[in-house]
Structure formats: structure tokens, C-alpha cells
Length: 109
Image 1: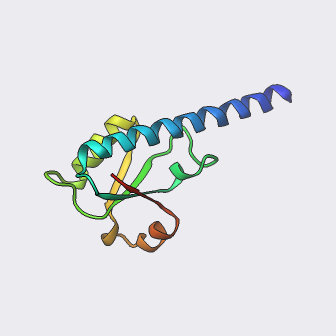
Image 2 (image 1 turned 90 degrees about the vertical axis):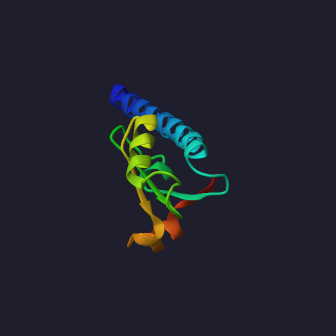
Image 3 (image 1 turned 90 degrees about the horizontal axis):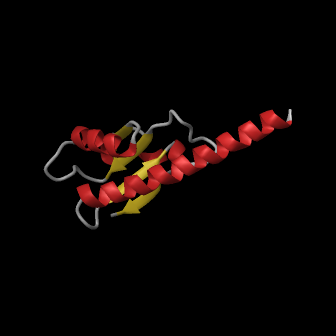
């Protein structure tokens, strides 16, 4: 039983380290791809240590279109950088807007 508990604890630690790593990569990439002062909302499992797993994606909502590219190109670039799927939407165009604004994390680049 102790071995199982150690395995579970080790997995939790690994998932939390990965969550923090992905958050750092995402923040750096957004600074590169978005103009200074842009707002983005991060939401979903990346905000919660006990929900983020090996297979988790990253959910991101932007206040406005990224300059010079579509949200689909940005999603592709971010996915490549983060090493996992990144879903990007425009906050004003999603039915999830109230929940994102309430429970999401606003980032200013």
C-alpha cells in the first residue's frame, strides 16, 4: 500500500511541475506573439494543481484577435511551444465568457 501511495504522490508532484512549466512557457510565448498590454484569460485545468494531468490541454481566451495571424495559427504556435494542445478563443465570441471572467485568470502581456 505504501508503494501505491508513493506512486500517487510522485505523479501529483510531476503533474504540478508540468503545470508550472507549461504556464511559464505560455507566458513567454504570449509576450512574443501578442502586443504589449494585451489581455488574455487562462482558464480550465491549468489553474488547478489537482486537475492538471499529462493529457490536459491549455484553454486560453483573448480579448481581441492577435495581430497578423488568426487565433488558429496562434493556437498551433502555442501548442508547439507548450508540447500539448492549446485551445484559443475570443472571449467576446464564446458562450463561456461569463464563466471565464468569473473563474479564469486574467493575464496582461
